[in-house]
Structure formats: C-alpha cells, structure tokens
Length: 335
Ligand code: PEP
Ligand code: MN
Image (cartoon, rainbow, N blue to C red; front, side):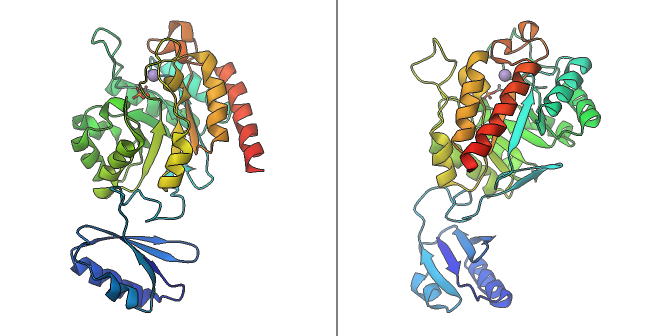
C-alpha cells in the first residue's frame, strides 16, 4: 500500500503518522520526492483502515499495490534511486561505465587494463577474483589474491572496484570492494541475498540464467527487505533456444520494462549477453539508447590469451572506441 502525503504535510505530523503505522506492525518505506513524500507500507496491510488514513488531511491519496515487489517498486519511490559507490554514483542521470577483465590474472594485467579503461572514460573497474565456471577443471580465479590485486589497481587509478561474491563465508575479504556483484548463478541464492541485505554495500545483481524480470525484481526485494537499499540491477542475457550464434539472448526490452517498474538503476552487460567481441559494441550502443544507467564490458590486454572469456573481450583500443560512441549515443538520446 502507498500513501502519498499532501504538499503541506509538516515534518511533525508526517513523523507522527509514520510512528502510528509502525505501531500497526507495518514496515514504512519513506521517499521524499521533489514535491510529495510517499510512504510505502510493507507487511500485512489487509487489516489497515484505508478510509481512516485517507481521511487525514496530510494524506492526498492511498492505493493498494498488488505487485509482489514493494521496496523496489517505483510506486513506492517515484524518483530514480542514485547509488553512491566510492567516488562514483549511478542512477538518476549518473552513468556507470564499468570495464575490466573477466578474471584478474596478475598485477601487471589488472593495473594496465585499469589505467587504459580509465583513460577511455570508465568510472568503475570490474574484475573477477572468484569465478563461477561451468567446468571444475577451468581457471577458478585467484580468489583472495585477486581481490588484493584489484585493490592495488584501485589505489593506482582511483577507480572504485566491482567483483563477484560466490560464497558468503568470504564476505570479510570484500570490505574495501566498492560494489559486490551477485552473478547469474546466485541470483536466487536467497540466503546470500538476505546476508547482503544486512550490509550497506552496493550490490550489482545480475539477472538469473533463465530468470524472468519478476524473479530479478523479487531477488532485489530480498536485499532491500533486509535493509540494504543500494541495489543495481544487471541485464546479462537469458537462455533461449538460440545458442549457436549468441551465448545468451540479450533482452534489451528489459531495460525500459525495469525502468518503468523500479526506481533502481539498470546496467547492461553486452559481453555475457552476446558472448562475442564483435557483438559487444552494437549491443552496448543499443543499450545506451534504450536508457540503461550503465554498461559493463569485458576488456582484456590480450584477449587471445585470456584465462576466461577472451572470445567476448574487447582490447583496450576497441573499448576506447566503443566508449566514445556510447557517450555520443547518450548525448543523442538525451536530446
Ligand atoms: C561475470 O560477470 O564474469 C559472469 C560470470 O557473469 P554471469 O554471472 O552473468 O554469467
Ligand atoms: Mn566473464
């Protein structure tokens, strides 16, 4: 249920109403917009007397929200959420250009790629330390050492870092990581989502391997319901009957759908979304045109020798060219 307060609602009376609602065992999500304050009520609202709340002179309107997702719902929070991660912000017009290798391989590699993507305009460095690989015989990532090297690259460039958490027992290693990635294989690891909800770290939540948009939103709801509002959604393609020419089917319609349904920022990953370097730029540009709040692109110093996902990685030169075009597309669609 949402209650939109009238423009003249005083802070004291607003506070009083919020306290009263909390006494009715409801969670109250407060969103201060430019003109109106919106109270999102979560919990068992069946017994709440709508007419009584509606009759208060500080209340403009009360509506029941039938969607299963509440805290992530744009009806609860009409303005775009802006997530601050280190020196960078994402959402509400702040664009995140996230780049880096699929896997951190060694210090020279990650520091070199970090410098190159920064020069090209990236404002986040991403690299995998713990890698979810289909085969147990493939490179599994450098683990804790990979995070240490990412922190070296962060010190060298000032770029905030994003890396994937695969096991909640390793969370202490992520203290200086700016954004924790939840990969497609863990999107419905609900215990992990609840734990991340108890932190205040920004979480980049990927869409599940064959996940629906509603499932993605419900996973984000798990994080927010546990108290962490810093959630960034990531469209990374889904499994469809096509798998010969594309690794996944990148669902760009998810961008405007998500922007319509939720206030959370939406990032697109055209690297995993397509699986081929030659497809990364066109889909990145299309995602920017569709209104994505950010892009996450795999960049490797020597894709032919990459330990993971070389076939979908751009070189630093290719990334610089793509980045230049992304900024031009953004300018064009902003009018
Ligand atoms: C990744 O980002 O490196 C990754 C493994 O992606 P996904 O979880 O989307 O498959
Ligand atoms: Mn990868």
